[in-house]
Structure formats: C-alpha cells, structure tokens
Image (cartoon, rainbow, N blue to C red; front, top):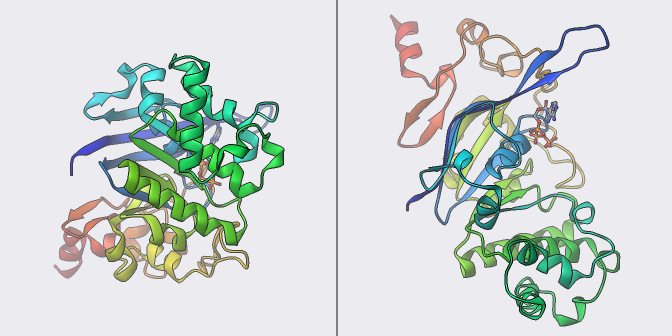
Length: 325
Ligand SMILES: Nc1ncnc2c1ncn2[C@@H]1O[C@H](COP(=O)(O)OP(=O)(O)OP(=O)(O)O)[C@@H](O)[C@H]1O
C-alpha cells in the first residue's frame, strides 16, 4: 500500500470568548496529531463528541487551516494546492444530507453541480454523468428531476454520496454519514459505501462515535480523546485486544437505545472534560480506572510498536522500567 495522506503533528486551536470582559482562552480542538491514510484503506476515527473528529476532518478537506503542522496529499503540502485541486481529489459526505442539498435544485442538477464548477463538458454531458453516478448509488433515472424534499433520508444521503463521487475523487471523508438515519437505513448506506469503495477503488476516512459501525467498515481505527490520538491499530486487533483504558471503556460502552444517535454511554462516570480546562498529565486520568501518580502530572508519549500505537503510561516500557527500578 502507498500513502495517500500524511498528517504530521497537526494542531488546531480556537480562541474562545468567556464573556464580555473576560480574556479569550485557547481551546485545543486537535492537538499534535500524526496519522497516515494509506491508499485503499478505511481509516476509522472514533471518540466522544467534542474530541476533535470534525475539526480534523475539516482540515483534511482543506476547509479549515491547521494552526500548526502539515497535511500532505501524496507528498504535496496541501497549503500549496489550490482549493479546486484538493476538491477534485478529496470529497466529504456529512451527517445531515438535507441541510447540504439545495432545496430549490433538482437531484440531477445538485449532483452535476461540482462538474459545472470544475468546467466539465456541456450541460448534456454533465447530466449524463450525474445520471450514471446516481444509478451507481442506487437511485434510478426517475429520481433525477425530483427535489430533495421528495426523497427519504436514506435517498438524500445517496444523493450526497453521488455528488461527492461525481468528480471521481480518491479520498472520501465520511463524517458520521449514517448517524442521522433510521437504523434500518444505516446498514444500507454502509453497504453502499463498502460496495462503492470496492468498485471505484476509493479510500475513506470514516468518522463515527458508533463503534459497531466502525468495526463493520474500517480497516484501521484511530481512537481520539480530547484532541489527541490515544490508540491506533488495525480493526481486528483493536476490537480483540484494546490497550488504552479509554478504548476498553468505549468497547464496553452501551449504545443509546437508538444505536447511531447520540454518544455511547461510556460507563466512565465522569463527563468528557472541558477542553478549555483540560486535566493535567494524561487528559484521561480523571476517568481512568487504572490511573497512577505519573498519569496526573505527565502527558503520555505515543509509543509505536508492531500492533499500532498507544499513548498510555501503562503501555510505555520506559515508565514501566522506571517504576520497577
Ligand atoms: N469554530 C469553533 N470555535 C470554537 N470552538 C470550536 C469550533 N469548532 C470546534 N470547536 C471546539 O473544538 C472541540 C472539538 O470539536 P469537534 O466538532 O471537532 O469535535 P467532534 O469530536 O467532531 O464532536 P461532534 O461529534 O460533537 O461533532 C470542541 O470542544 C468544540 O467545541
């Protein structure tokens, strides 16, 4: 496999107002992330609401600049690429298809719009291409002249997927693509995404708080906590032998009565920390059943080994050696 996307030490902060007369505070939404996306893989990104998944997705899509660090597409720094060039190669599929589909445009013209923006062919050629991709996502010709409000949620998500694919991108960033859908429709959309990946040779970054969904579709999984990747492994390894206590808690979590809606009940007791006042040391330590003194003061380093990577003092050989000495 070769590397499509390289994310190197990427951070994104926001200056957040705390009231009329209070000084603004810095919120670290994404904090020094290193990741690669290999061609043809599905990199799952999981974590609770607010851990920085969407911020990372927006940076990958070129919609939000990183505060520091680099993102490279096949070795080329994305800052040096123009917006259109990035959009041709990387496309998003978001959670709520309804808000992103223009209610006054027909399905065919919505799907053909990126072709118009990129100056592809004439009106007829664009429509033909739009109809072909609509067919590929399971929406036959009769849908072409309908409007978004005449479609079900699942059909609208198919339109959003068709629009994302019409420019034949290499990488699709799926940000909670099934979370707003009824349970019965979720698996249809997931299966469609898997078929499209196989047929079109696509690569996905797949963001979800729903572990069952990620297990189904991802080939590798990165677990995020408060802006950092705390564990990364191939999917089978992560689900069989999780190492970080947060990953273990997520795996034991009970999904909400309506799977796919809301964050999982982690059983961790304490709430997700305030990103404006992150805990010292390991950000997870206040909720960690295995925390010890070092965890309260020292930020864990990320240890890489053949199984993947993990940022936890329990799994850092240097810390273990120091404790044994
Ligand atoms: N434009 C912004 N201004 C200020 N803070 C922001 C902004 N965008 C995101 N944040 C903050 O950054 C942190 C990460 O947000 P982000 O949306 O990336 O998380 P997430 O894991 O995708 O959560 P969710 O699943 O709820 O979308 C949160 O604390 C959020 O409040």
